Length: 134
Length: 109
Length: 133
Image (cartoon, rainbow over the protein chains, first blue to last red):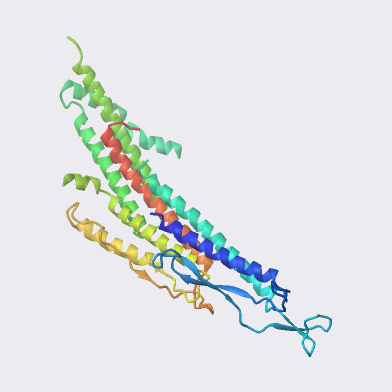
């Protein structure tokens, strides 16, 4: 009976997970060491979405398949003062472009709002149908 | 526009010949004969036909709108409201008639 | 049998079918909206024009037949994959503006059909109760 609301809810979850990945990317823009303190630049994360509700692949909706790490090469920045520079003076910085992250963030937020308004429409349609009896 | 609506609603419009014919018609019905104009039963029959016609018009307008033949939503709404009011009027007239009949039936001699 | 004819008079059967169509279409449009960011997703839709053409055809048949014999129950719209709009690099030809406006239009049509249906049943109800309100 409430399949429509389930569909929209799955979209909200998926877009929020995507936002989490984007937020982590923006936060890790200049991170060159990992949690153990070893030189290990942060790799950009991105979410892969696929059709099908997370609880039931045949039901309409969307789910996150995985959050992958972008394997594109790190940015090389010339900095002789950095302790981790290599023999040519380059430091490997995370492969994150702020412009791309900002645009992705806007897209995710727009999709989130669109799905919220779709949920409101579903609720109003259901209310109108229930009023047949009243 | 309000005058037009009132005009449509008034009993004068439902019954041909105006209010005088209505009074004459009622008098004729209680008198038991068809004297001087249309009898009340004819008038009632015509009103039922009128209401039925209005309802069929409204129904057709709704079907045309839903099937995409016309785009006139306000036309459909007004047609439905007209048919609804006509039906309610007829129902009110019927109730009054039934009440009058009951009252006459219960007159003690 | 005459009760069946009484309940199914006027525009009630068609309004029922329209309401079923709009709720089905709503589900598909929601699925499209949920998958705006999915790679290679095919847009799904129910054609409104096709459905209305089927309704028009059936109402002609209905007018020519005795009352109560022909209904609209077996009219079923087919799911199609519209290829209109810009095809983005991720293989998805979505347009958020088109989707949200389609959702709004569909919801309005649904609410209109339900209101008209309610009014039909209210008239019958009023006649049965023999009271004007």
